[in-house]
Length: 138
Figure 1 (spheres, one colour):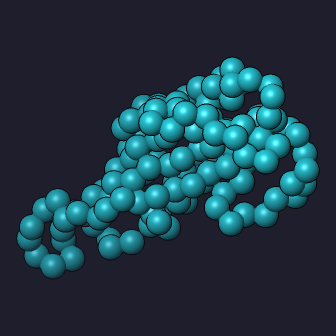
Figure 2 (figure 1 turned 60 degrees about the horizontal axis):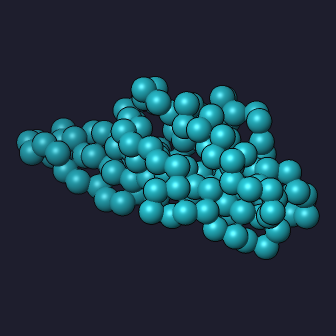
């Protein structure tokens, strides 16, 4: 899983910039699991933390690489276009907009993971790659 700082940065972007659909984070509460309205399910994964500089202890820069998976869920049988359109609008929240020391450097709609069926829903995934630079150890 990602660091709390990476999670907080992505949550901040979505909280402040997205009102089109419900957003649910990993292990978050689902208010109405039977609803057929589109929603976004978010997973944030930190792939690795690498020391980028070498110097005095506590003065080095570390880089966390990771990805946010924004699964756009639409009702089964409604096609994939709406999910793709929602994913494209979500991607605009992160393009060329760093949050603190966090940069969003790659994005893909469905790359490597074509849409998948779940009970009552179809998911199209927006994958956002990120790196976060840190000298504080958080």
